Length: 350
Image (cartoon, rainbow, N blue to C red):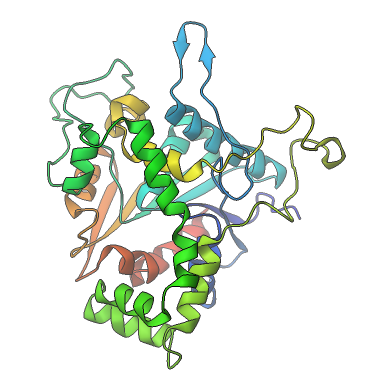
């Protein structure tokens, strides 16, 4: 199937620990609300080391060593280019949730010629910055601006992890990645009502109403099935190769980098990195966009709205909308109404 330039195309960047199945789990509910004059496509790729996707590795170019986190992000962005080239899509708009932000803004940085200039972000995870500028200065540098991030932006546990209280970044990310990878097993081993009641307890009253409307009268069975399917991302069975001949690829040759199932750990490692470490200082690294639209729940206790406010101040043409009583999971699971309106309007403009 060729998408081509006549359709609107969005790249979806999922949160840490999730995978490409989240796109179908969330977007499919809102498909009837698209009223565009042309076809709209959403593409979501498993990041390296997830669901059978080839893992990334650190590389050395000349005298410069690229960190595993930087190579992970670059590989994820390069994979997107491979796919949109395959589908003959000239430019894409970007939509992310939570920690997908680091990959969305990196894609805008590395491949500005392949983006439309529209970025939509939900419950943005923001990389920390201690105020000390790196040497990776871009064209948007303004030395009068304080680049340091708010101290209340992330949880206390995250702050402790950033300071090394729990051990090295690689050790913490590996342990946390293993825990995240076991989530799918919890959905099949724990009593269904525990999962549903625990999830709903974290939602606002309005979000609970939306939950009951989406999953009525079955005790949340459909919700548990959706979450089990979403986190059980598989091993890549049924996938195909777009950059080499399928007949030339097998486990015994060098034409395929194998999946080592380290995607969750590397997602966590990115979250434990600073803007300077990743070369992603939002103000100087992200090219000016036509519009950056942000939504964040007022009651988000996992990722404080102060981070989204910081991001709004760093990026040109950025607008933050507060979701009244919105929680972290609720804002992502039940799209803000005006987000759907913007998806429609921008898709018609692309």
